[in-house]
Image (cartoon, rainbow, N blue to C red):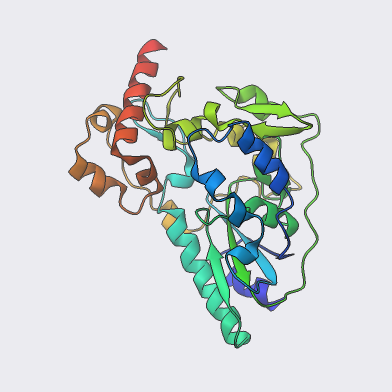
Length: 307
């Protein structure tokens, strides 16, 4: 399909097409919200009606194009320095993916006059993983991450809604089997099994705590200053095998490889607004805000003293 050739030319390692149908896991998501597992992220409930169907974002939508962009790179801990999740090491992924998706949209609109497209990257109220699974990009692991059997889970998901009707791909199929490494390795026990499926209680998840949770941290976050990669680091699908050489492959995206040098934890804990503003421009780390970054760095220092 020419669409996939163009997507790969733009740098996306994965590309698939799903029909623009109602979100398959809408009820399960509503039940997850009812349990309060979303913590202080009230906007998730507010967006629920919009998430029901992609036509709420693009009237006349016929297809949902899902793409994957690898962000993996080495990220060893460094004593006295902040530990930041791999996805946030380089340039803000929202900007990188949105830029590429807009180019893909322009290609579609040029080849299908009169068509419309809308790019969705994380912040848009749509079920990215649901449509990515339907488009064949991957299946849900026990840690709720989307896992591609050949590439693992170190990739961003982007969606492009379009009024063009493309031929849909087969939904991805896969399973973790008896493996429970992510469950056993999770420092806070955030991965729980309820109602016949694995779920993440965000109130215990270090990624949520260091990024979205306001105020004082209710539990230790270990060495993590922004986000957490533990459940992905231990996942067998993120370790190379002879028959799956693409697993754990380092990203080739220059914007992700262009890491910035962060100051020490001591400096971060007392960061001025001016320096925070300069440090976090164009970085996903900006999401946590200056108070959150100071708080997290201070917690890291306390955790290191206690260990």
